[in-house]
Length: 116
Image (tube, rainbow, N blue to C red; front, side):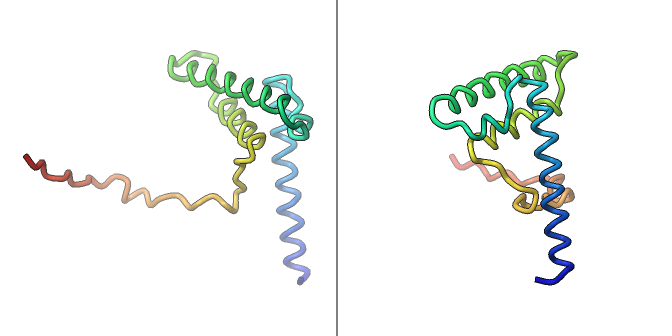
């Protein structure tokens, strides 16, 4: 392994640790749950925390749908990311598929002819 690749790996690892630290602090402030402790739990305790998170996400979704003044998209995203980490569905930045071409999204699609 070359020095440059080691530097790149070190920076990526540090960046990931910083992201996780921010998530842990934000999550604790929002829900009162220590995410690192929750990640170590197993069985019924972990499922209980997952259900609690699902309820918090649902409440946040309803606030957004009603355009409530206290709705926060960042809080909604953070709760979803925490739930994904607890359920093992977390996706790292290098696993995320590239976004679609915005030009193609605006094209009108042909409707299939109706057959009677």
